[in-house]
Image (cartoon, rainbow over all chains, first blue to last red; front, top):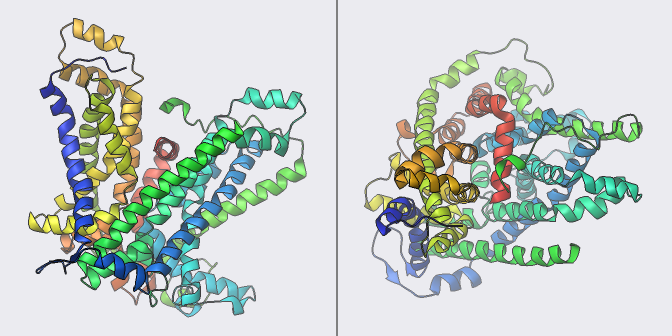
Amino acid sequence: MNVLKVSRLTIAAFVLPCLIIYVGIVFVPILVSMYSGLLDWNGIGESRFIGFENFKNLFFHDPVFWPSVRRTLMFAVFSMAEIPLALLVAILLKRYIRRPNFLVSSYFLPVILSVVVVGQLWKTIYNPASMGGMLNQVLNAVGLGSWAHEWLTDPSVAMYSLYFVALWQYLGYHTLIQYTGILNVPEEIYEAARIDGAEGFTADRYITFPNVIPIFKISIVLAFIGSLQAFDMVMVMTGGGPAHATDVISTHMYNMSFLSMKYGYGSSIAAFLVVLCLAATFVINLIFNKLEKRFS
Amino acid sequence: MNTSSVVTLNKPAAAARSGRFSIAKTIVILFLSILVVTQVYPLLWLVLYSLKTNEEILSGSFFALPHAPQWSNYGAALEGNYFRYLLNSLWVTSVTMMAVILLSSLCAYAISRFRWRYGQGVMLLFLIGMMIPMQATLLPLMIIFKNIHVLNTHLSLILPYVAFSMPIAVFILSGFMKTIPHEIEESAVIDGASIWRIFRSIILPVSVPPVMTVCILTFINIWNEYILAATFISSEKLKTLPFGVNSFVSQYSVNYGAIGAFLVLGALPVILIYFLLADKITQGMVAGAVKG
């Protein structure tokens, strides 16, 4: 309950420093960007107001845009598909492991690393065997040499190589989130269920699962929003290449604005991304509110 | 949900009933151990890689130990500006953390305790901000910073870092401050303490646990941030560690071992901290996710 009555000046002194920086750095640029999306501008010289011309080009004439949207959504699908696996690992950890600290810390290790370290590490792993790449060397060594690929330069597999790195890095994060959720389910419920004859995976179906739905939602939102924003890993590993084969929405935006110097056009992509993120969050929340009602 | 109830990793798993289902248990342990290998082995491989000669790396013996550890790879890596990058990262990250803690705790206190009309509105603004992708602000910020002449300074990194760390910080802190019993403040007011004194001497000391969570989240996010640094900074002497590592590795393409060594050095600070504070970091990051 808010109880303290203080003067307006005091409120301003507490709130404004934070709020001014926040609004100035987050909201003002977003609004500027929405407006720049309506301009024909290279970012330096004269700008020309062209209305929705940029969006028209983006939606109807840009051969890179829709494939990049598809890759971004696939990124989200793959990331979300990993969460049931994380839940399984979490259930196994809780049921079979008495002291999970070592396991949990090992799974979590990749999460804390910079995307640069992770990206460059996997670039090295994906290198051709002749350049010391571990993956191809392993495949050659176990007699699967025909499976060896140019993992990042072959357009047909490059994107999957990137998805895999993201899955690798965040498996531990989702596992730990689910594990925390499971630990918070009161033990009494399991005991009551045991008396009623529900054990093992039956108990998980009727107790663990309904109780971790809110936590499951958190993982889904994180995975989905994280994938829409997937950017730095792609920049570090491929920069969107070869030949746009790994372009996602944000790398397309970056390349358009900073390499092709189409600032107005890049801004229209940025505006699209913001709207997509807000809409996605809204829809996910809607779906899970329904789910929670049905299960509880 | 307050911090203390979020996770207790030390709690023995009550459901682990030893002796029964021993075959199942063996399979499970095997499965979980394989996951440890997939999650940790790439990093160990990198350490081995960083100690090998080019010939050893190219020979294809990915599992072998280096014949003689090539510490000279690390020498070559340190000839790059490693320590300069490290200092820059330390500076940028610590200034950001201090600013985030100070500004967000003031704002969170006002939102959770003051009687005023727009508290919920301000909170809503922060909640929306959590969903806004940082990269969407990249271009307009670049133009704005260029016009006010802060591009290519550390300020051009610290400002957005602080701003983008604020929503989650305000959210976590105000969630905690709502749970502080207000009898404490009432008695302080009766004793004649000013609002600033209440904030400094009562609220902040009590809020240490959520402040630690915010510190951990901010540290991991900012220490590892790459794309803003790569966009706003161009001087070699201002680069932060992730940016420095990336530019070293992309330019230095003949000596594989030295690249590996620089990557190891790039990962080292955060891994050292993780060894010391693993439980705190995992708990903090999960708490951050669960509340966000």
